[in-house]
Figure 1: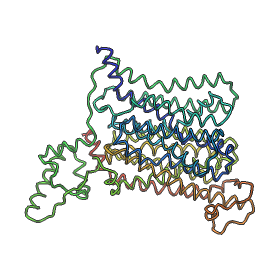
Figure 2 (figure 1 turned 60 degrees about the horizontal axis):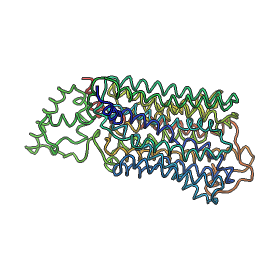
Figure 3 (figure 1 turned 45 degrees about the vertical axis):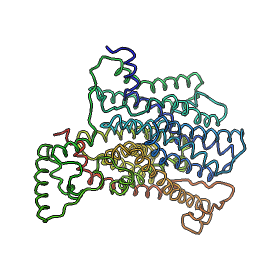
Figure 4 (figure 1 turned 30 degrees about the horizontal axis):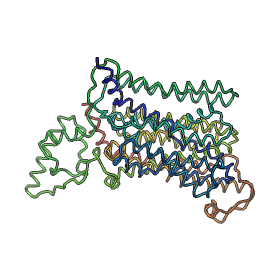
Length: 591
């Protein structure tokens, strides 16, 4: 038995403690998902119109996704320094918004409010970067589950913070803005010294699989519980005591995962073993063949042509490669062929952002994410209007539902994509293609406007959208390495606001306004869908236009469905191009 002091040291440096702390940080820092609840308070207090609120929404989306600085600082500052910058931005941004809304400081122009919303929401990128990169480095061979669970808690944070606000039962809506400024600040400051790489690849336990199963069970229980209490609170007028009880049970569920690091650190289980990083076997193979790092090797194109060689068992593959290289060098010596020297890393090794950006695989991931996640975010941003146009009054029910499905999509996407790579050594992006197929069906349902479409549509879109954020970070880390993962991940997240800006800000809103104008018997603007009218900010009268019926989002939903089909094609191209890479990364466990 180790002394208590040593066991406490083991506990503090346990990779499962880092993972659980990162889950807690993510569970209260998905501030962007609360904008739908914050915007009415800002609108009423500052007398904004809907277009001004939409402008703040764009600033929020940009702040949530522009993480270049966070990715760059990750390699320069300690992890706690990165988290501290995020805390400062979150506190200043939303704290100042709270002061303005409550009239404690003078009202600022719209552009200043946009900057404050951007700065406050941009703090999320520091929290995401520190949590994701630290945990992926600590669990190099469980990237799918780790990323899925962490991104899932980020998606669920809106529902968690909303329940905490319901318990506080503040008399004014501005109190939620104050909670957004102070709550995440307190949690992150408490945990920022725990979240860091701790050499987790040396802490492998035989029961790690059971530990992930336990956390998955907690995730499902948490999602079901939140869904249940949302429905109950919506249907029944509960007193504060019952709401406080519900919130206390929520806290207990959030604390349950801490059982894992406690058991690992204070039980007498056998000593942990070490697992290798995914790209290390390639280095070992090259060393076994007696060649040094700067050897002359086949070009990347030549490698991809010999697929049958790469899919052989390890021992047989090594023989064949040695034979081919011997023939190649003999031919080169005679001047019969010209041998290329490989420049830069191979896929599966560590790329810089600049090196990754000249690879077709990187842009396939980016544009597939832009089309898939961008179309999903269009539904999320317009869910209130979509439900109202179909005759539903309680729009917040569908907002809460899609938040839960988003969470389950992230957790499930990580889980099932890990089965794909672990059990079949098949490219992880195939799971993204499946998710985008579900989304294409969901958009088609919205276009048709059949009975119950809001329930089916939010289910398919929420699951598919959430799955992207579990699959893409894991796939990017596998194809382009962990060393510069922070910069790579934050660049890929730019696809989200880019898709939202084009699909929601231009396509969906323009078509909605056009159909609303037709229903109001108003002549349409000069261009067919009112885009020029929107951009020139011409007022259409005192009363806001409202569209009713399936026609409001019929064309938009069909366009989004088509974009998801294109995303499926891009993902399948990526699958075809990376079969060999995944066979090398994961196929050795099957030989």
